Amino acid sequence: MVTATALEAELLELAGAVPDPELPVLTLRELGVLRGVRVHGTDTVDVDLTPTYTGCPAVEAMSLDIERVLRAHGMREVTVRTVLTPAWSTDDITPEGRRKLQEFGIAPPRLHAASDPVPLTLGPTRTHGTETGIHGAADPVRCPHCGSADTELLSRFSSTACKALRRCLACREPFDHFKEL
Image 1 (cartoon, one colour):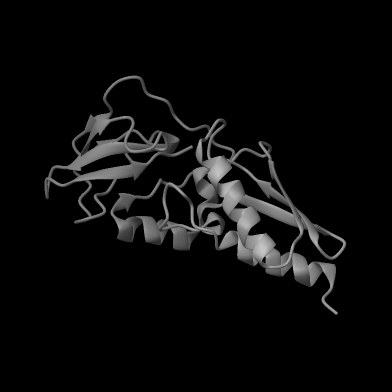
Image 2: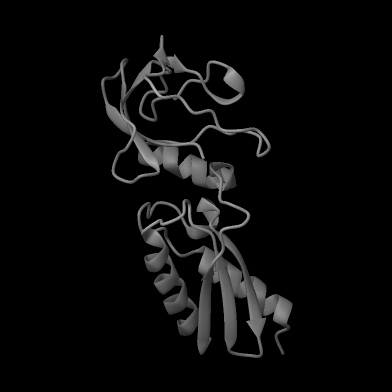
């Protein structure tokens, strides 16, 4: 007989392996949006999911994909709850997720301490290839193609609201940068 804890761990693994609909190179576990599962009885499960930002349009697709995977595994009733507290942060992306973003050609977000505020600037922030970043230090956004820190912001928004469009001034390639939250 499988214990509830073992079943929860198994279901968490299955739900965590679901690809993100906007960044299919990442799983929901690697993105850090899957918060937990709770089993009730033998075939009912509640799943907690935190969106990358309030109103994220991908939450519905994530929920449907989680429901499909867990139902295929024998769960009769699957409830996916959107949980907003604690808020998701780009620090929740796993090291494996950061590596995959880099390999996919997306500059991963820079790390910051969860207790530190994320700085907000209202104008262009490029200064000789760096920008004012976490803790007020010059913190470069590196090109995922060549590794150069000499990059510029082209648009604060890219293919999704969580990414900005940048260009490398060394290799001249445009790339997405997963913005820090």
